[in-house]
Image (cartoon, rainbow over all chains, first blue to last red; front, side):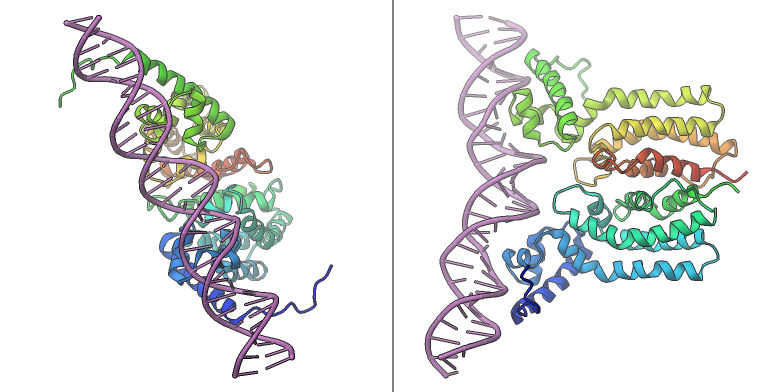
Length: 191
Length: 191
DNA sequence: TAACGATACGGAGCATTGTTCCGTTTAGCA
DNA sequence: TGCTAAACGGAACAATGCTCCGTATCGTTA
């Protein structure tokens, strides 16, 4: 209702701290995974607990902020792949490879994605809002081309792919990419 | 080394408490999932924290004890299916259906299975020790029949299936069975 | 430039949950 | 009946998420 046009700009120290926190969180996430204790991130950034929670009300908000760039890049790659690939199914497969690469290189991110812990809905919602439409576009194209079955929604496919990526980083014997490849192969219709 | 033949039998109250605990744990697992607080289980059973940890040193031991019957049943179903089915691939698919049914009906069990939290190795190890050989037998038969690709180990397949079952109970829109079906379909070689 | 109010900060503190430890109780035996 | 090993219960500790509030600082205004 109010929406004061341009809200008063943040104080300089607040902006600075937000940047510091993002850098620290990125570093800690790489070192200890996205489940790293909030205290560790605060310590790394040299700020108090209160500061971190003021800037990022939930851990999910912090994770989103840290990985926003990469999610955007993944989202934007979808239409590009659709144009440059030989077939829609190939484009879909390539795009899912990108998605898998993103997930498995972030310790524990795939696990956090499916966690039903309160506070992670935001994370879940952001990923889905941004990526499901892209996946839907690719999947629809492949269905229209008669290459894949039509009875699976994009969101289901992405949940499955996300789940297959869980634990991929902590277990050398587990090859998420291969399993996802098999899943995508299972999508194909017999010709 | 020592292995006193028949170790002295447990005291009657200890045996009774173990049973009570198993019943309470089963009830709490159904109500709140396998991640239910240990305190809740102790309270439900009317015993102290110490008692639960004495009988089951880790949560995994308790989970194993509660579900041992069903794991055994699943393991024994493997060879039976192989004999009664039309093809090894069909037997494999049916067996995996059993496995999936087991996982999705236990709130959070699939998640616990892949958790790399210390203390869950026992659970992991038990499931794998008991079920991987069965899955290997089915998979090998299907490979020998030329029905499925030969480059995926049974343990990998089971990890993938287990992962796909994560969160299946807490989200109505997610159909683990269907995704597992697609995965298994992806295993097939073109004829 | 000095004062002041809004903004932001820090970290103590509370809540939850896994796990351990030890003083107390009790079953089973002699 | 008395004794001892076995078992018990729950207080206490540790890790971690999250909140709250007294204090410090920024930025504006007189």
